[in-house]
Length: 324
Image (tube, rainbow, N blue to C red; front, side, top):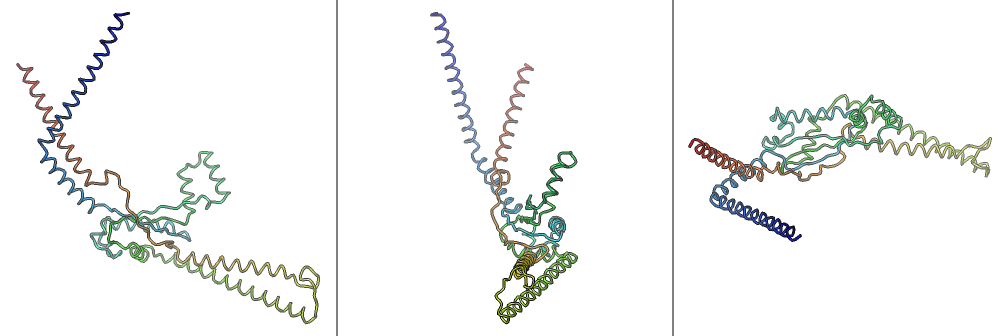
């Protein structure tokens, strides 16, 4: 029993010795690293300054740091035209910057860092119950995948978010006005829009005519009752007018007029912005901050070169010893 206790004490002593040696080696490693940095301090400072300056220049000149969003309403099947137009705009910026600069009335030094992205604002309620059941059936039968279902939902939405990535010095609302006049003009859609608005206005006029006719009928009926000194009921009687039905019809016509006026207001254009641009800072990852990333890369590259030199030196020494 005494021998077992002594063995346990020896094992514990050796364990603590191993920990002590480990801490000593770690301390020597930290000290060696500190001395290495101290010997090369000037070079490290130079790498940080050069990398930071170059990164700051690249961050400033070659990437957008702001984003602005505008909600667009696309009606009368103008969604496809909207997406094609924004694709054309991005293509012009990449391949014909001078054309895009002229169309957007924007300087060339600003045009190179501006880009546009469209995202649908989907609403599952825009699909009818019958369409939803049919899509679910197709999905269960493996006749359609989730991606195609999402496309079907997107195709039914009229709201889309236009995201503009840019730098400072740009008036986004003015830029959108230029986009609207230079890229979002379509004669066919404009004609469809004007016809639809004209039809709604004609319907409002017809409703107003019907309301005036109802008012005339009710006025004449009231006069007739007064002239005949009759206090008869307005409701279902063989010889009396059904005033309740007329009032109900007038109420429906007034509701229809209000809805049509709202439609005309909402449908001011086949592609219409619903808000002014809202601008915010772009959240960038570490790899997007070149003024931080480049100094780190230069320092890592320096350590890599030093490590290769050290390994090559040790390899040469090993080869020389083996030759002896």
